[in-house]
Length: 289
Image 1 (cartoon, rainbow, N blue to C red):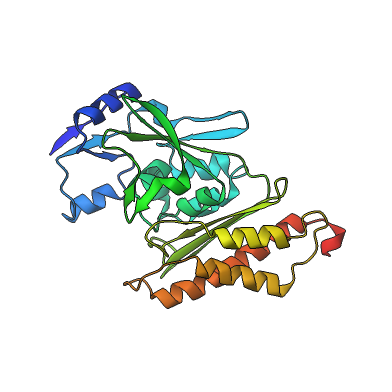
Image 2 (tube, rainbow, N blue to C red):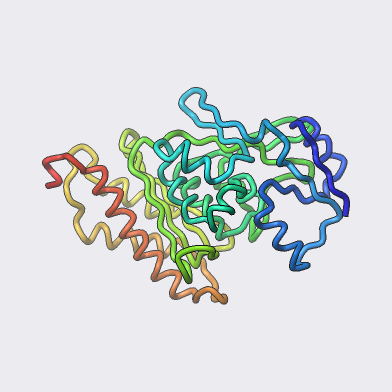
C-alpha cells in the first residue's frame, strides 16, 4: 500500500484531496490492529503524526480547541481540571502506551459507538472542526456520527480539532467492561451539570448504532434539580433519570453483552453518575448536609 507522511496541515489536506480513499492514522491504535489482523487493507495510509498543528491546545473566547492529534495522556495531564469528564474517560482507554499514542481525533474518526471519548464530548456540547482544501466547517458532535463506524466527514476532509467549553459544573464518566483495562466498553455513560444555564448534558456509548444523548432524561433532570437551593436528591428523581437514560438506548446482543444487560447497566451507571455529580455540586453547602 502507499504510505503518505505530510509534515504540515496544508500538505495533509492536499494529500487527502489527492487520495480520498487513503485511511488517516494518528496514533494508529485502531487502524494498525485492523491492518495487522488483515481486517482492513487500505490502498493508502495517510500518517498525520508529523503534522504539528494537530498537536496544539489553545483557548479562545472561553472555548478550548483540542487538536485532533493531542493524545489521551495530554488530555489527562493538561486538561483534567477543565474537562474532568473527558479526562475520566481518557484514563479508561487501553494502557499507558495506548494513552500516549491514541488521540481524540482518531477516536472520532473511527466512528465507533463504543468510543470512550464520545459520551463526555456529547455531554459537553462539543463541536468537531473538519477541514479540506475547500475550507473549514464545524459540526455539533451529535450530528457528526451518522451510523455504525460512519461519520459526516466528506471523502476529502480530515478532523482538525474539537471545540469544547471548560466545565461549568461537575462532570462524571462511568464505564462497564469485561475487565478493568485493555477492553472495549460494554457500555459507557457521561453526565455534565451546567448550573449557570440550569441544564444537563448526557452521553451514551456502546448502546446504539451511534453514540447519543438521552434528551428526555436531560430535560427531566434539568426541571427537577434544585439548582437555586441544592439539597439531597429524592430517590424517585434519581431512579426516573436512570429509567429515561435506559429508554434512550437501542442496544444489540453481541459478544460483549446482551441488549437487556446494557439497558440495565446504563440505568445503574446513570443513577451513580448523577449521584456523584450532584454530591460534588453540593460539597460544602449546608443545605446538602
